[in-house]
Length: 506
Image (cartoon, rainbow, N blue to C red; front, side, top):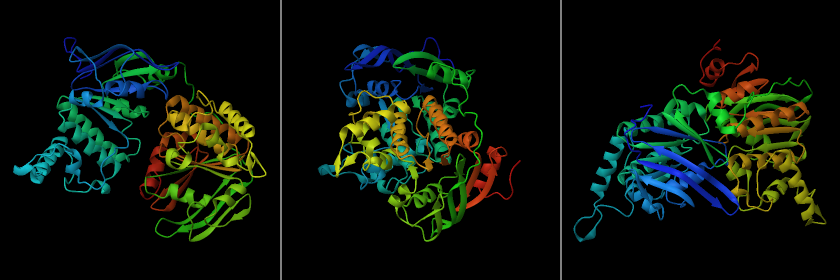
């Protein structure tokens, strides 16, 4: 279904909706129509208004102007419970289940069928949960404890819970951000099943390939304003990017000349029992080396060991010829090593501290005198890097948790670039950020390499590896399976090495 029947009423719609928070206009006259049996993508850069729109549909926010329509009739949601009772459910990328309860108990929490004398009918709960999973076409054990579930399975439990409330609209906010390829494929099949059963699905993703593979229509927001709602069929990826960023993006991967400087990072026969074995490689000044491989291959674990977060059992690491000892991040930092971690929220930022404090965390010595912090120095340093990286914020004193994902990533980068690193390790540098910010991060990495910084870039995004890396190291089951010159690397050759296929695909 690409073009909705003109006589069909949307299940849920926004008409001319505006929403402000103080002086910030998060939504400006936005309209959106969701139809039964259709997957509808919501596209836009970080800060475009997607989160505010989702929360408006889910009853968290009430519009300042405009109307929410349910089956063509105006409706006012006084809270999330109202929206849920109307059949609107939001599936977040990180579900919040009760870990000590079973899958079935999580689905029917507070609504369990009862026997006589008020006892919970556990058999009826299990049977109902199993029926929901059959409807979704997935195999999950209703009696399994939620604590043992993967993120992907937790999302399926949330979807089953939504169906138990007779949800007709499912809003999926970046549902594949933490999933493997096979888990994402299973989720896509569930979405297709829901569509066939008549649900309206609103799908939010920064991965444009997912939008084109799964959705029939796409609405684009930019700076809180509606730009277009159109069929995906016949739409070019470049056209969608242009609507999102308001300009021709140009090359997502900048042209650059690989550096040929001295060896900046040397890793020799690095081993951590049961995690990775005999890992050896070098990164030279001015060079970007991509570290590729499937989830679980050991890429992030190698980065953590090199930086000293995790101890290694054997091997050697040296920065600029200076040997590092195992398990000493402070020694790694002193030698000029910096690590931008994969999970910026858990490991890269202190969410209840301000933007300026987060940027200043790696330079406490530079911003202090006699053990006392010089706030002016800290603020000046933070402001300088915020300008250099084009961080969008209201005040430097705002909590970093109030920033969009792309701006949080820039703050993590600013924190580490402020140390003037010799070697920069970036783990999934553009995960969860929009295409415009992604291009900015790529240009930044290219500039750093041009200035002589040695960069080790870990990424699950194969086009990113191929577009940025001068050399590609591919890991498979804890070992370096291949080293491929950037000019010769292809998706086929990298995946062949990553999956352990003998030889290299042409």
